[in-house]
Figure 1: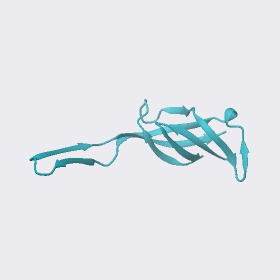
Figure 2 (figure 1 turned 60 degrees about the vertical axis):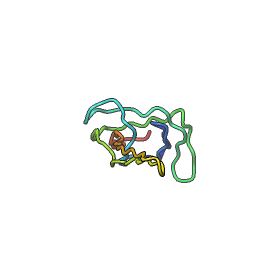
Figure 3 (figure 1 turned 180 degrees about the horizontal axis):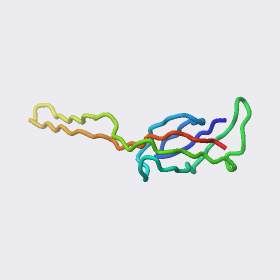
Length: 98
């Protein structure tokens, strides 16, 4: 069985046993959480009622993504700005979709 869940403003297709990286969620490694916003669920070609589906997951780790360099420059004005950003992530293992 699979489900489409929304967390952190993004949508993910998940099934039992999948590992996904989502925007930072509260909790520590080993904690069990329930993903609440389920948009669609089904198995194969058939769709199920998303309101009756629950998706449970376990937090594997709290991590950071790759660094993104932000560089701004204006020609002929001696204006240069360099900045970096690393987004905080939560690594999840999907335990069950039921």
